[in-house]
Structure formats: structure tokens, C-alpha cells
Length: 440
Image 1 (tube, rainbow, N blue to C red):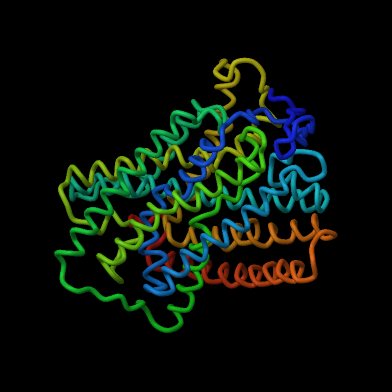
Image 2 (cartoon, rainbow, N blue to C red):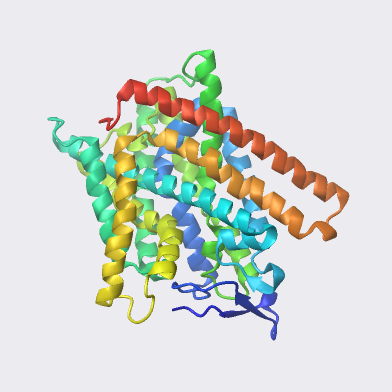
């Protein structure tokens, strides 16, 4: 088991020792900043980027879509920096989001934060399984048009592969080499989607960019797209990722965040903007369904999207795995001993089975992105981050700074409520249109 008293230098100063606030069965303080940067970049350039042309740009249009994506990146960098700078507050390292909230607010907020984070990560993982299923279905229809392999079946296969991967990777730091594969797979589907979209855009006749739907529908779609904007950049598990970084943890986390929000966002922008430019208002929420090109090239892109999704899901499932391994697993000895592997098969397999069932039941990817952003990304990343910083640093902040943080708390709380209503409406409408276990 990892040491509960793993020590760190505060801000890199020799002789200052910071201990982890609680025990964990997973590794901490082990990864260089650039590995953590690639973990964050893997999250934002996952196969979800293939959906932003349709789920963000189509409802918002050119001006609001471009400004929104850039502004959301800047605000997300700011909010994540606030959280990362609270990592060592009170003389302890807070290696989980709920530990940090519990230290600042008390036990009730610990439980509420854990609940919000669980909902956030569960829905993100459900979306990943939908994405992986869509990639498999896209490969199938390239070669067969008999409609025998339906989307729910593809989702079930995707869930099984994700579970097999989870059994073999004991903790987040163990991804190492797989992060390289993830980056390669991301580049494959992003470059192919970019090039094929660019070719289609040049060759196709002029397309419309009008925001589709009646007035009421446009309002709800716009609000849902705003939730998708914040979903695009945020993990909802920054302290858990920061726990893996080597000291000095705050300085190194700052480097990783700047890498994520400068170099890391460029592929996302490229494929999102070119995809929308090429297909306009008719852009699919899974861009590879819109592109035209050689079958083998589209197969390669979809296969890369599927494989990258399997790796990315493991990142966002790791807080749940860490909790289960620490609370109920033995956590000692070889990670690949019979007992530890059996435990992972039983517990992680059960968790991903539930994820897969929900994914097959409600395979509406864009709606899940909006609902995740509304119910958990807004509260965790923006509302809670600003209020925690306000509470922790209240004696060091000026009146202007306090006002700024309160404006963020109130503003993002209102956005979260509006976005949740819009997202739930979208899911209800789509459920009536397509039915449960839909073959989209």
C-alpha cells in the first residue's frame, strides 16, 4: 500500500515536508509533470472531440461557438489553477477532491463532493462507452448494410473491452506507455477527420450555418451547448491527478495545466472548427459519420477512436477504482497476484457493467455531455473551486477579489441550474423520438 505519509517539499523548498491527508492503495508522487500533462491532454483530446462540431458549433454558430470555446478554455484554466493551489492547504496533501472539500467545509461537504464527483465520472465513463460503441458501429456499416449489428450490441462489446483493460492496469500511474499509445491514436483520428473534412469542405457546394430548430428549441440547445463547452476541458478529478505528480506539486501541476490549455487544445480546435466549416448545420455529433473518404482510412480512424476511448475511460474511472481498492481491496503485494486481479475483475467488472447498461439504455451522446457539464462540471470545477478558494484564502483576499469570486459562484450556479433543465429536456425529447436501447 502506498504510504499515507508520503512527503513532499512545499513549493520546492527543502526541509518543508507535506504529508498525504489519507491512505491510498494507489501510487502517489511518482510522475513527472509532462506525464501528468499528457494525462490531461488525453482527456480533452479523447474521441469526444469528434462530437464538438455537432454538439457545440451547430447550436451556437460561428461567432458564439469560437468565442465560447476559447473563453471556456481560459476560464477552465483559471478555475483548475485555483484548485491546484489548494492542494497542500493546512499542511497536508489532499489527494482527492472530497478530501480537499472535507478539510475546508467539514464532513457533510465531503460526502456531497464525493457524490457530485461520482455522478460526474459515471456519466463521463458512460459517454466514453457510447463513443466506443459508435466507433465499432461505424466500422461495421462501412462493410455491411444489413443492420444486424445494432448500436446496443456494439456498446456491450465496448464495455467488455474496457473492463478487460481495467483488469490489467492497477492504477493511474501504471498507464505510462499507454499514454503514448493514446496520443498516437488521438493523432490518427484527429488528422484523418481534419483532412477528410477539409477535402469535403473544398469539394462540396456552399452549406448553411443557420442554427436549426424552432425558437424554443434553439434556446434549450444553446444552453446545452454551453454545458458542453465546460465539459470539453474539465476532468472533475484534478486533485486525484495532481496526487500522482512529483514534487514540487503545485509548480509541476501549473506546468501540466499550461501544457493542457496551450499545446493540448490545438487538436481540439482544429478538428472542431474544420468539421463545422465543412458540413455546417448538418454536422453529425460523431464527425466520422459525416466525412467521405476511402473505406480503409475511415476504418483506421474509427479503430483509433475506439482504442483511445478504452484508455481515456480508465483515467476517468480511476477515482472510483482507487476508492474501491483502498476501502475494500487488500492493496498489498504484487498488483498482479491472484487476489488483487480477482478483486479487480469482480469490482471493476461490476462497475463497468452498470456503466455499459446505462450507455446502451440511453445512447444519446450529446445529451450526456450537456447533462454532465450541468450537474457536475459546473458545480465541481467552477462553483466549488471559487468558493473553496474564497473560504480558504479569505483573510488574504481584497474586497475586489472576494467580490470577483462571489460573482463566479453565483453566476456559475445559475448556469448550472439552467443547463441541467435544458439537458434533461433534451434527453426526454430524444427518448420519445428514438426509444430506449435505440440503434442510432
